Each structure stands twice: as structure tokens, then as C-alpha cells.
Length: 316
Image (tube, rainbow, N blue to C red; front, top):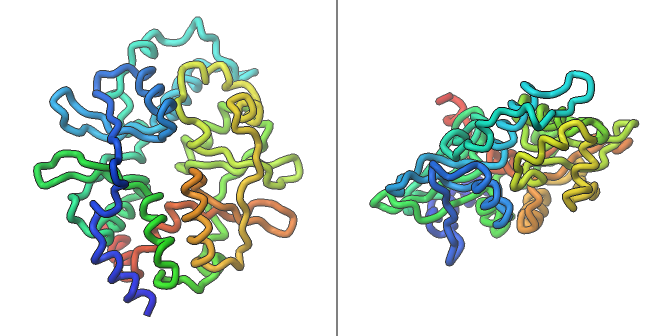
């Protein structure tokens, strides 16, 4: 019954209804310097921004992970093999002249996806779930193809939070849903360069930072990298936990859930946490070691009715 009721919700709710009233659409131009883009992300506390041509046509999204991957690329080429440090005097001059167009989907997981304002949420879910990497956001166009808003996974989560009793799989536990997986762990004293490299190469957007005994102590994610600038290269050889503490994010305990938590309860918690820009919960064993992670991407996948999910997988 829940599947049918949830299908009614997502088939009758339009994309335009998820756009926050008075939403200000921040954009950058394709020839804006990378330093300017970084400041836009940092000053507005956002992870992504659409890139437009001078005529206003959308080229794509540029987000924190694209910039992160670029700096990892520079670090790999210029690091000291023994210390992991980078000699700033030897860095390519092209960094200073790099522009936004160079970094559109540089991470290969942030392609430009859009829906029309009258598209249904079901269509939005299909669009987000299509491809190897789940879309974290969708541009919304009007009938004239003008960009009028952005829908994120957080917006989808807020909708799900209003219909908890209608959700598919709502009574299944996180263990039954197979979510004891997906976590990538790194020691919290590993250097920043190695942690960013792990994010870059594994395709995840967050790492579980663990202590010497493998116990979960902190979350390190794209949210901790807002507004990355060239200055981050000076931190590449330093412990990741020092980087977090220096930038005021510290090593706050991550949010933890039991594998026996129901999907309904998990969505309820994430709907609340997402308002505070927290996008995942960890699953741990009795020794506090991370054994799984539930992100907004996982939930968005499970919000697609099962037959729709199977159709999406079959089309890949």
C-alpha cells in the first residue's frame, strides 16, 4: 500500500513545487577565475553553482568535488614523495589563470541534469538515479529553457519527511535494505592529500575518519571543503584532523545509527539533519567501527518505486 501511496505523491508533485520560495539562483560565468568561483561557494556556504555562458546559457555545474579533484591532480604532480608537501614556487602558473569552464564536471560525477518546471518528482527521481553517479542536484528550466531554480537531494528529503508513513520500504531495517556497506575509512592522522586522493579515486563524497583502533571519530566530506582555494595545497602534507580543526569544523562526533533502525526512522532523521547541512549517518559495529553509511544518495535511490528502480538499472 505504501508503494502505491508514495507513487501518488511523486506523480502528483511538480518540480516547481520543490523550489524554495524566493530562491536566489547564484551563477558564475564560464570565464570567471577559479578563485572567484571558490569565493562564491565559500561566501554563500554552498557546494555547487551553475556555470553560464556570457549569453546566459547553462554550461553545467561546478562544485566543490570538481575543484577538489583538480587540486588533488596538482598535488600528485608536484608533491614531495617523502613528506607529501608541495613547493608553492614550483606550481604551474596556469593555476592562477584557470577559469570555471576548465572545471565543469572535472570530477566526472557532477554532470548537468535538468528537468522542466512541470516535471513530476517521479521524473526528478529517475533523472537523479540515472547513471553511475547519483545526481546531487537538478536544474529546473521553464518552457523557454530558462534556468529558474535548483532542486537538491535535500529538497527531495524534505518532501519524503512529510510523507513518512507512505514511503516504500518504510518498515524495513537498514540491515535488511543492505546498507551495511559503502563506507570508506581513513586514519584521522593521515595527511590531507591522501584523504582527498581517496575521495577522488573511490567516487565517494565522504570518508569515515577513525582512530588507531579503527573506531569512528569524525566525518570528512565535501561539506568540509567549501571554498577550496590554492591555499589548500599548503595543507596537503598535514594531518586531516588538523585541517578540520583549523577551519573551524573540528572533529565533532558523526551521527550514528543502528543497523536495526527502520528506513522510516532514518529518513525522518536525515530530513531533519539535512536542514543543518548534514547529509549522512554512519552504521557502526559494537566496537564503534564503521560498517556502513547511509547518505542522501542512498535514500533518493530507495525513494524510487521498486519497478522504476529496476527499469533505471536495466537502462544502464
